[in-house]
Amino acid sequence: MAIIDYSNFIYLPANSNNYTVSNRPYSNVIDKVVIHVAQGSWSSAVNWFQNQYSGVTTHYTVRSSDGFAAQSVREKDIAWHAGNWFYNQTSIGIEHEGYVADLKWFTEAMYDSSARLTAYLCIKYLIPIDRAHIVGHVQVPYPNDHYDPGYYWNWDKYMDYVLSYAALA
Amino acid sequence: MVSADPATPIRTVLRDLWFFGVVVLAGLLVIFLVAGCGQGSPEQQRGGTTEGPSGTTEEQTRQETTSETPPTGGETPFTAAPGMSGGSQGVTDGILEVSFERPEGYERAVVDFGSEDVSASGVPTWSLSSPEGEGYARITFPGVDTTSVPDGLLGGSILDSFYVVRAPGGGLFVDVFATRAFQYRVTELDNPARLAIDYRPASVDLGSPIPVRETRTVLFEPRVGEAVTNPLRISGYSRNPEASNTITLVDAAGNLLSRSTVLSNDWLETWGYFEASLEFPPFEGQAMLRVGGQSARDGSFEGVEVPVVYGKAWE
Image (cartoon, rainbow over all chains, first blue to last red; front, side, top):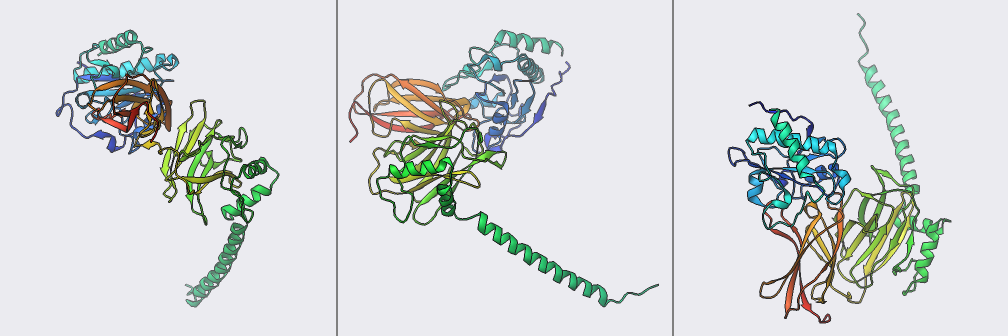
């Protein structure tokens, strides 16, 4: 099966204090994608992940205006994003610029780019394309006080886009 | 073939070096004189500002009229008035730096303004809202949206640390924490435009415990040992992941009395303000209020713990 391309990103590495170096998928299976909303801007998120004291990062962050992404952590490494060590070990985290309570940040460009990225990851790591494996941060088990991506995130649209891109493979 | 006199280049070099030395010495003298005129001590700058025709004069006068301690030798008194304000609209939207100085007899935190390393032409609009006896001074800048420094240690014997926080009504505020009770004053400085907050120790005790601070959470309400009633107002600021703050109240036996989650208004660019109202049932003895976030790594609690009692006054 061909692997779809995802090249709409730049590598802006997080500070090494904010993730665990690993050798996935050989060390840990990658079987989930976790969808986040940043509660802030793309640039401030990427910058904060580069701060040695932040204690947090995702693998990718997708920009609202044009869907452009930054990769902060290599997929083989364990980003600290889910607030749950098991989920961190077995997932890829995608942050999205914006605020859970503000619909205008969830643009077509961001849905499209993020869905293409998720499809690329699902094909690459053989992750089933369903809502049990492409999850919101809110779905991470207790203890979890997060409810992103929130009410305004259009899951139906997003999953349709992921399936469409995956079908191209 | 022409053979050059080997001494000639050496003489030329020596002459050139002598000339160069004279030029360098003259240059250093000019730099020294300019520095002496333009970079006087903070006190010299303050004096100039006070005597100038700008709005700064008004603020200095207001400080003096609210003084409880008679000034000596022309010194601006160390009693700022909560509610005092100053600055000019539209001069800048950014904080560049907060630094520490230790002039004779007091300690000073200096807020520099500007954006992208360019200093502002003036001090932006500011207002003071520091409650008396609370262990900190709060200066709000309603027209300032960005900061290059979110927090830092000041390291003085009385000046402890500062936080730059996204204000709930827009703009930013800066909290300057003390180690104990203090007297203070706020002064606008020129060239470059800065705001100075001067602290010196006071001979009284603080009216309430200093807000509890941890790595990514600062809790203002309630304070340690406070008697709480239902509903409990909670406020503070944090930098917890995705602005999410968890609040739990646990009784002495470890039973969960109440739990809530509240978003702060920032976490990525600087500290984000939050407030919440927590409902809880009556409890006996002491309970523990925990406010903070989860470790993005493993979900463990990262925040502040404040013991509270039910319905009694501070002792």
